[in-house]
Image (tube, rainbow, N blue to C red; front, side, top):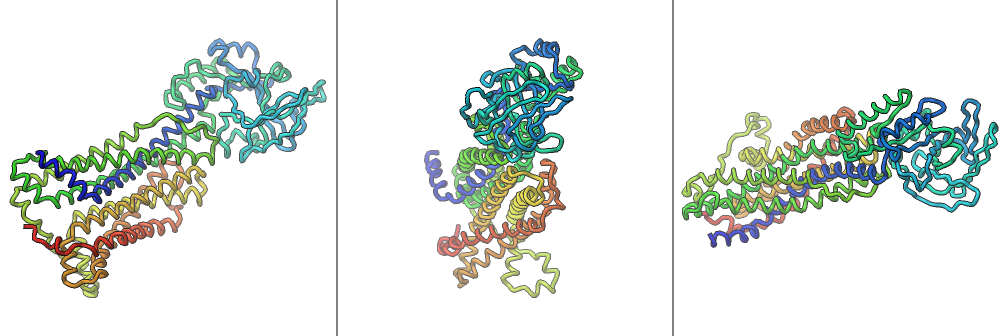
Length: 615
């Protein structure tokens, strides 16, 4: 056994290219799948962090009465949730700086044209303990001015000037209050920077949102909003359990105050839309994960099967020396384990990077909280475990099939597959017009059915992934049904699909060349030029890849249907014609680049070593 263990290091050294192929396949597959799952978790963690750090209100209760809430109604809420969890305030809108309600007019000068929403609270800015505002900019205020805070500018809200001055006056009351801009703030309830319906009033965009704190004129005369936080906040925000609790509490509040309206966080556009984006990303990942895993396992199985075939004589020798089947296969299982483990370890860092890229893409749509520090490894370990166990199982099954053969059978060189007629030969009009080299290429392609099937399926799946990535990108950009953030996600999906496509074609082509070193060496001895030898291999590669690409288009169409159904936008009939053209062209480009990479290896095949008799 000691002698046998010495061969392990030699195995890894001699088959480094094969090991790298497994590592790359596993890295791309797990990195993509785990990164997608991790991005969804990071979005949920970020929302939960904002919910707790900013003490976001669970309920916002709005009065439907013109006079607002009575003290008795507020007391009912304080009895249920505790006075420390109830914040009173209100809001109203001014058009061109004027509020005119039932003959009561207030003019807020200095705002200019447009609609301004004013939020006011019963507590001071430093005492605000719900929906805590984050200060973006601070300005010094002059004595005699009340501080006024403005919501930060977005694609919908207009920016204030630092020297802005405001004055409240009334023609019906002796009012004359001066305000000065004290700072620019960010409200966690308004994370969205565009398309936020809460930035609208009567189908018009708001120009400004301002906040006033502890201003007696407003808080003593009108309270039409009450903010409530649950005493127990042990549930992840927007989870199914939290939703059940929030709806139950909303119904309870409406029983206490039948004339009121209650809103939960599920009516907040920023929280819900960001959460839904996470669900859509997860849906894309789950659909594509199946394809990525299928292709990876197919490549690992093909690689390890070829590896075992190359060492059939060594396996036979070990059998004659009395080694048990599992003892013989331990080397190959270790090889598969090491390749998968290295790829898995690298994929963890790739998934972290992918999750971060996806997360920061949402800066186009949201003012994001800091990237969550909480570690998300659940999805990674799930995908990595499936890949690892499947790779070991595939290696074990292929190895047991090999070790069941008699040593005498394994010691003899593997007989080449007999040539058979192909379907095209039954059409003499076409077949007779082909030259000998094309006839031989067609026969070789279909002679090795297992290799042909694996190559076609792998190229088909990877082409379908490229098509799906392009289709999602097309929907987001040209059909205007997505957002800038989803465009970024679509680009990431496309890049990983393209990378998988390239790795698949390279690995399978490399295996093809490895299997045929004797055959290619024979052609060289017979005087074939380098161009003729490489063309002999390239024609088969291009033919097999073309079949896989052709089948990948309808399979990609089905994949697009699943993805559009999950994302709830997009349509296959609306996919641009250029997408159907670009997907196969990209796959053909990858095939061409791979053939260039392998040319040196083909022309440098050692003829003497390759033609030595195995026996």
